[in-house]
Length: 125
Image 1: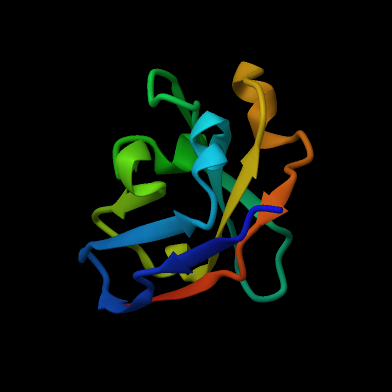
Image 2: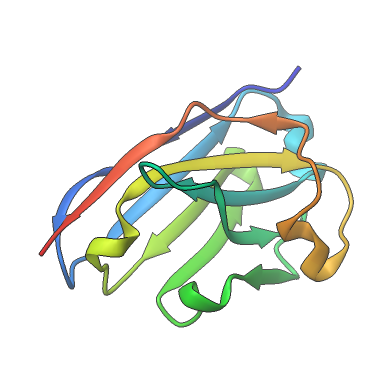
């Protein structure tokens, strides 16, 4: 079993930045593909970004390209999401997730094996 714990959320003004972290409980997560999703109130969960096991491949939702950057530090068993130029519509609970393998754009839709509890990001206008 892998436990994922997100942190770094908070309240920020539009145009500001936040860096989210997702710490894993087991070193074996270093072989996993890791992703970020988000869910705004009253909306379905939305894919944000994904990174393969060694950081060599990434994929982003179109609306996040150029503003968000996913990265990982396998020595720390941690995945990050750097969010810049935040907008009020970015307000949501952000979740990290883990699975094995890589399938390009399909990573936005496939089932993930493990999920964190989420961290709230609120962007004020």
